[in-house]
Length: 109
Image (cartoon, rainbow, N blue to C red; front, side):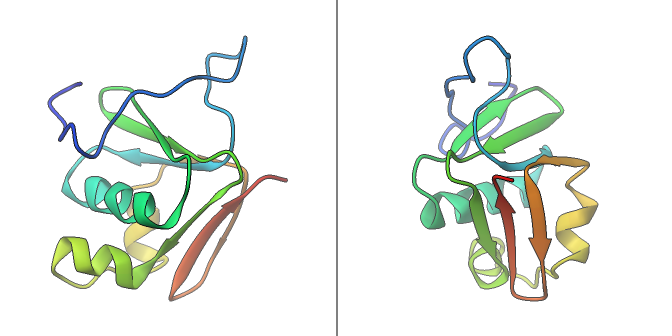
C-alpha cells in the first residue's frame, strides 16, 4: 500500500464503471497529517473508504463525510487549523465542501 500505515489506509470498492469511489470526500497528499485526518474521519464517518493512489489518498464516504479540528488535534498531538492546514494537504475533493474553524464537511450535491 505505498508504504502508508495499513491501519489508516484500506482498500475499498469503486463506483461501478467509473473507476472512482462513490460518495463525497477529500483527496489528501500522503503524509503524517493526511493519516491523522483519515484516522479522525474513521471515528466520525460510517462506511469511510480510503483509496491509496501512491502520492495521494482519496477518501470517500457514501453519505458524505465530516472532520473536526479537535479530532485531528487529538491524533496529531498538536494544533491543526481549519481551513488552512486542511487546504494545504487537500488538492482536490468530491462533493460540496463546507468548512469553518471547527469542522469540515463534504456533502453529496
